[in-house]
Every structure is written in C-alpha cells, then in structure tokens.
Length: 511
Ligand code: XMP
Image (cartoon, rainbow, N blue to C red):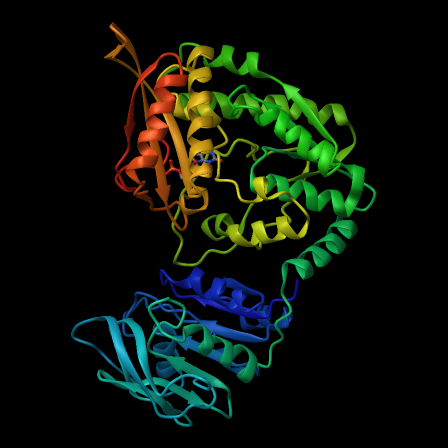
C-alpha cells in the first residue's frame, strides 16, 4: 500500500488523530516514529510529511529531533505545534521559551489565504496547546496567520512547500481544521483522494493472493467485527484455502454460535469449523475465582483447542490475525513516544513460537475503518456494527466462580439488555453494554414471598478508544424497562443495579 502521508510522532496525544483526519480525506496516512530515516520514507514514495505535536520543549536536552533530511525529500512538510517549533529551530529561526503553556481556544487572524486557508474565513477559533512559540521564522518563511499570543501562529515557505501551525487542526475544537488539512493534502501536496474501503479491499486481495499463493491459512473466528472482516477478506482473496475455526468455549452469548454459523456458512458462504469445547472450558474453570487465573486458563485452553484443530486441517502455512493499527502503534512495529500501553490477553493471541507464518491484513486500519471495509465486503450490519466482546467471554462478567447456572442467567440478562437498547434505538450511542452477575445474594420480595437471589449489574459505557470511558447516561424509563424485564424473566436474579463509574478508576469489564 503506498504511503501517501507519513505522520512523524513527537509524542502528542493527538498523533493518532492526525492520521485519522488525513484518512478521512481518503488519503492513506501512517504514523512513523519521529526518528524514522528520511531514506526509508523516500523508499515508500511518501507524498507529504506531517510533524506532530509533542510535550517536549525544543530546548530540552532530550528534545526529540527528526532526521533533518526530511526537508530534502522534495515533498511538502507540515509541522503542527512542536512540529512547527522543530521546523523553526532546525531551519534557522528562533523559538521563544514560554513562561506558561497556552492551552485552550484562541482566535486566529488569517493574513494570507494561500495556500492553507483557502475557502475559510479570515477569522476563526482554533485550539492551542503549546509552551514555546515562534519568535523569528526561518529565512524564506512568511507569516500566514497570527493569534493574540503569537505573530506566527501559521507560517510557510511556498518555494520549499514547508508549513507550520501553532494550533491543532486535527482536533474538533479547531474550526475549519479539516479544510486546512485538505488544503495541505490536495492544494499543496497534490495528493489524490484515492484511499477508500473499496481500494483497500482490491489492494489487499491482490497482496494476499500473492503472499498466500497456493498455501492454506487458518484463523480463529470469534464472531466479532475484526475476525469476521478478516475471514471474509481472506475468503475473497484465497477462497476455500482459508479455514475459519470457531471455538465454542461455552462462554458465548445467547444464540451466538448458531448466529455466527448461519451468517458465515449461510449468507457469506465462508466455510467454518465449529469446535464444541464448552465442557472442557467449564471443567477447567471449576472452582476458579481469581480473574487473572480465569483469563490464563481460558487463554491456554483456547490455544490448545485451536492448535489441535489447525493441525487437523494439515499443511497450513499461515495464521491470520485481526491485529488493528492501534495495537501495532501500541506494540512493536511503530514505536513512537505517544505509546499508551494496554495489553489484552486476547483469546486467539497465540504464543510467540507458532508453527505458522503470521499474516495481519488489517494491521493498517483503525476500528471504524475495519467496519467500513466489512460493509464493503457485504457483511451484515449486525456483525459490522457490533459492540466489542472480550475474548474470555462471559467468564469475566461472571464475578467469582463460573458455573453453567450462572452463565445461563447472565446469557439471558445480556440478551435482554441488548434487545432493549436496540429497541430504544440507542445501541449505536453506547460503545459497549454489559451485564454482570455478582457473586452476592440479596433479599427481595416476590408476591408474598421472601427471595434471596443474585444481583445483576448493568454497565453501559461511551468511549472513543476504550482506554478511557464514561458511563452512559441512560434514560430512566429504559433503565426501568430493562430492570423489570430482568427481574421478571431471569430466574435467580432479584436485583438490578447500574454501574456509574468511569474508567479510570474502574475498567470497562468487571474482571
Ligand atoms: P477494560 O476492562 O480493560 O476493557 O477496560 C476495555 C475493552 O477491552 C475489552 N477486553 C478484552 N478484549 N480480550 C479481549 O479481546 C480480553 O481479555 C479483554 N479484556 C477486556 C473490553 O470488553 C472492552 O471493550
């Protein structure tokens, strides 16, 4: 895939957002560490470079510095915040050390519309978040815009096509941010808006055909968005040489196994092997209450079952995994300073020594892009639009020991929760809706009888990336309906509570 724009990461919390905003313009951008060699960018025929913001002061001893040869690549460069200060300091201008950070909205006064501010008003609100600022721009640069705080809130050298912005065009608080980025991408860099889900599918199918050749591929299908898109994409590329394996751990939701089977075998005609392993999993989980221990057992058992099944297929060279771009940024391949590390014991994550070559066709995509690709591949909305579901399944929502009885209650409560939020039309407003069964019993009354039964907690969250989350402000009428249905329909539950904790300090799942 040709890298149209390289975003060099100086550690800003907004680096991913820059890449996403560029991609929204249908231009393919990827994040590279700030120290990437300019030759490596040239080898990828990069069409433009964006230097991100970052928390450092350009005067700090350990201030991150990019390869100065990026300015000699002959492609346009846009520096944002720290990126602008880096440009200024490197090309001979002066950066003033600021006594205090400027953080928040500011009014931008445009002095020259060409080329970045074409089609936007002369005056508008932008979002600032910086310490140092430009005092004297490098030779050849002119001021394009000013703010109260800075005469050089935007600068540019039209001959060398190097530009810098003190503010953040990638955040929504900056008005016309997308227009400014679009002007840079299309008017300055002359890039084409050619990166679409359809172009991604066409390109990937070609790549996969070439890489896989006549060999066979196995993958673990979970029924979630990522593995479903992966299976469908691979099937389009190599047909029946892809073997999708669905391990029924017994920790799935109500009707999930049948549903996945129906969609893949029936609708999509992607062959699927369902391995019934509920008994095995439940036996291994017997008596186990520690959350990490539960995860470990499930992870290992999964690997054993999946591995044995993959071996049965025979002659398999490749294992496909649904790794996404944020996973990559957070782990190995793209290591920049803006890493936020979160490891998941992803069921399906295999040990390092696997007898297969790994292929990760979705590794360049963000979650919403995976969904767009899924739609392009014809996956039904009920799979593409699904909330995420953790690998260890309902086990991490069954606080304490996992038993078939508790799983049955949880399954029903979870189904009711999903039915009701769907009926109320708020499924897509909620990032994840979870029912949790607590290992405590409380007293209730049903008819004239005292009851002593389980508590079911509901947790609905909103979030952009699951690293942080807020609890969903559910309307009371809907809460009442869900509560009433659960206590009426789920034998063994006599109390429903709603979780009103954000993440942090809580996590999304209860275990
Ligand atoms: P937490 O509980 O860590 O959850 O705040 C954040 C998101 O990750 C999902 N999650 C997992 N997904 N394997 C997965 O595939 C796991 O072990 C796992 N643990 C949590 C969780 O459902 C939420 O979407």
